[in-house]
Image (tube, rainbow, N blue to C red; front, side):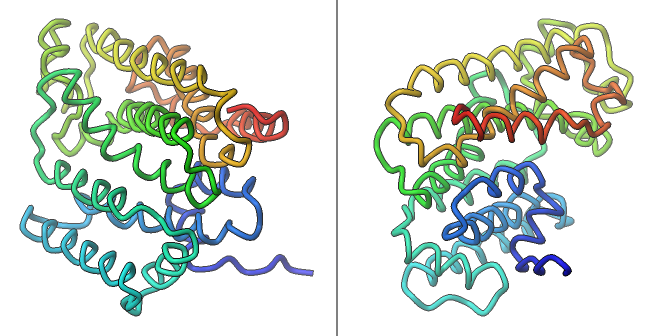
Length: 281
């Protein structure tokens, strides 16, 4: 017997955000489609910079999503394969409108190709683009308490920082960077060399500093484990995935251009499966 076909949102997440697809599989079946709708929405706004040719078009796209979210909260969703199931999830779980606004507003920064000035700017960017989604996923799972929301903030920020490290070669090929300029200067890394994908020795030190910041955020989140209900686990599993990717980056000597980092490994699903089995993120 053939497996049941995935919904449009689930298929989009499986294809474009496989890490979150994997974590959603460990959520209760009753809310899994709501998570897929949420993650599909995130993909739609996150890809804005990649699908437009100029900032004005990006602003128009993000405004379309602002209006779509407004309509969803008012009970008049647009006819769209992501908006309609997302509206259902919003009303079913009474999701926090402010988190959606933060996610959309955060993606406006992607329309400016200038690198962040310093680590503080980078962390702020990672927080607004990463934390709201984990908070909303926690709310879908019924974990709305302060400890869950704080753990979600910390893990979402750490996950976004990890993603920025992994995306460095892709961004560099487009003459873009999310690496802090102060660190680049400190370790004598130049953007022209980065954009040619010819890493200078100091790039490893820049990467290690960002990785250490992500690890510190994960450590802070895990200090809250006893206060966070078990129901939040599927939303917080990106912490385990961040460990996996940061570990691989570390083993490469923090060489962000290493081709070994692009190769899929069996360790990723195993790590998530084991974490879900023992109930630890």
